[in-house]
Length: 178
Image 1 (spheres, rainbow, N blue to C red):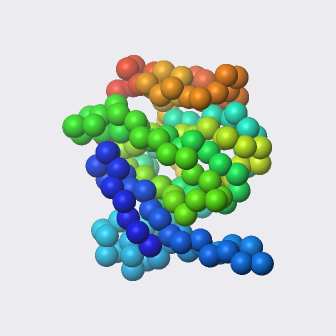
Image 2: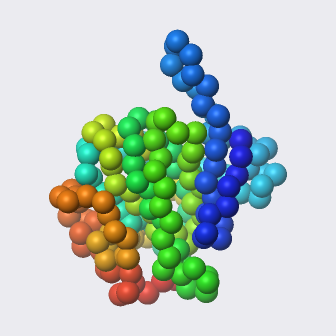
Image 3: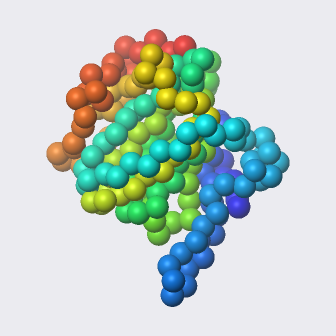
């Protein structure tokens, strides 16, 4: 396993070799000792799996304190443009975004710490996105930022959004507790 810095402090691109043969492929996406050695939070409480049609944008999601969480995000089928925005008020990169393509063909995945909004665009029908979180879902702490008003240029002509995601505030309107 390898850990790569991104321009946003605390956000890491992780890489683990994917082994392929006639049977298919195998990849280790979590190792407790590796996370501990790199001082990465790893007390995961929930694991999600979403299956997405092409052109779906999910996000930009996070939970408010005290139910905020760290996420580990990887793609097991298809591909996505994964986007993360720093919403930590005191951070020198507040409001900045980082994006990366994650796919079943890549060895990469993301470690997203507390204080970041997360979303993605599905680039293929049937894209499967998996993410582990260090807190349990809390409807009263569930929050987000409007994906079309957060400074990200999404490379899609007719994006598909949930009504919930379309009702979020813009990044400029959001009063961050982080």
